[in-house]
Amino acid sequence: MAMTVELPALERTEATTPETKASSARLRRYAGPALGLLLPVGLALAWEIAVWAGLSNGRLVPPPTKIFATMVELAKSGELSRHIIATLSRVASGFVIGVVAGTLFGAISGYWGLARRLLDPTVQALRAIPSIAWVPLFILWLGIFETSKVALIAVGVFFPVYLGVMGAISSVDRKIVEVGRTFRLSGPAMIRRILLPAVLPAYVVALRVGLGLGWMFVVAAEFMGASEGLGYLLIDGQQLGKPAQIVAAIVIFAILGKTTDWLIEIATAPLLRWQDAFGGRSGAA
Amino acid sequence: MLALDRVGKTYPNGVHALERFSASIKLGEIVAIIGGSGCGKSTLLRAIAGLDRATTGTVTLDDIAITAPHAKIGIIFQEPRLLPWLSVADNIGFGLSELSAAARREKVARALDRVGLADKANAWPRELSGGQAQRVAIARALVPQPEVLLLDEPFSALDAFTRRDLQDHLLDLWNDTRPTLMLVTHDVDEAVVLADRVLVMRPRPGRLFEEIKINLARPRDRNSPHFDNFKRRVLTALDRSLDRNVPDADAKSTTGEAMWW
Ligand SMILES: Nc1ncnc2c1ncn2[C@@H]1O[C@H](COP(=O)(O)OP(=O)(O)OP(=O)(O)O)[C@@H](O)[C@H]1O
Ligand SMILES: [Mg+2]
Image (cartoon, rainbow over all chains, first blue to last red; front, side, top):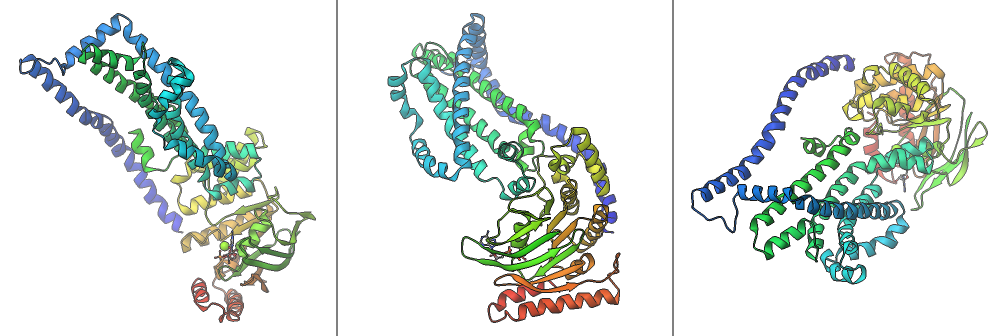
């Protein structure tokens, strides 16, 4: 009885929402970013006009056109792509190593209580060390070239991934695990059909945090003596007094960081459609 | 036949939750278990499901000792416990992974139809109402055709109307293959509507107190005098099961009683 009374009401709300939902979604999709762009674009424009009108010579804070011209110049000579590729490949290899190690150790600590008690205190103690403090040691151990840079990035990526995976696995709902048990799932099937999907949302968050730290640490890594990379462009710009080059590198960092984060989001979105969380929807918007 | 032979359970923390519980339940029989809060009903059901092991005694199904979850025994919990990352159809098919995809699809479609949720096959669990979700849970447990289906307060989170609806629905589904049903409930109405036999338990330690046969033909009329009669008998038994316990903990027993009226 209650069902038959309830159903028409449900259908009615479903019938009316698609229209309003679609239009408000469209509004949000375009209005949101547009509103966010207002401030930086406005400031850039104002600065451009100020320099153009002679209110400032723009030497220390170059106007947008100058920055853009610097980028174009770097791009034309092929310098830019060389630096971008150098930085990207460092972040990529550091990220992969950090993610693999973080996932492995995080999974072990999350799955076995004994391993957690054995492993976790050490990892937590290591985490308390500011990662930049490793730099001299890494240079001594691994040399000044790529290996030490990648190692530093990997360390930065490792901790958030480790913590995320461990926390997610150890907090998987026992009730859901029991469903797997009643259907007599074997160990691997339990991992594949229950644990992996259950930890996926937290894992994606951990990956994104890890990637953010990877981008942070690549700059630190490239400050410690690199001959190429966006971090090198920063140092070079400082030493030779080229602020436009510094800002150009910063802008490219921002673009690359945002793009790679967005790629993770896009790639994992189909796997997380089921999520019933406020964060899930606001993240997609 | 499901045979419980002096099943007892003491938890590692020393709580003596269940003592020497014996019963034998024929295939196709519906048994309701009722009793005060904390008298070991869930403990008993989990032991039969093989989720926990009894510390003493044995659970046997057709002469097979049950110590771990068994293919012939299904369980439905108080919450639907659907897997949020699977569609409704995939949730129902969760226990059918040995079947070919086509066979599974067919069985799932039939089950969806049977619980009246054919239009929700591709919905996510979060898009279901509580009653719909519990129906999916029932379908998921029934689709592998268990011989014994255990239900631990399956409808207690639902409103009275939906609960009645699902009780009738459960009987209807039971009629298809006639598995043994073992149902824990706090609702005397529910016990008398569904069960062939009501087992009343008493707490501290949990054990069997009284057994009441419900000799009423199905479908049962909730308003008939016979029905009332059986309800009263179950209530009286419940009262007595607690009365002897009053000096032990009266605060607990009054909150327990509130659930039956
Ligand atoms: N995992 C556990 N560890 C220790 N003690 C437990 C555990 N589970 C239950 N108990 C104890 O065992 C006793 C019986 O619990 P059980 O859950 O079987 O009761 P119940 O009859 O299902 O109660 P309710 O009607 O409230 O669901 C209680 O005293 C409870 O505190
Ligand atoms: Mg219980």
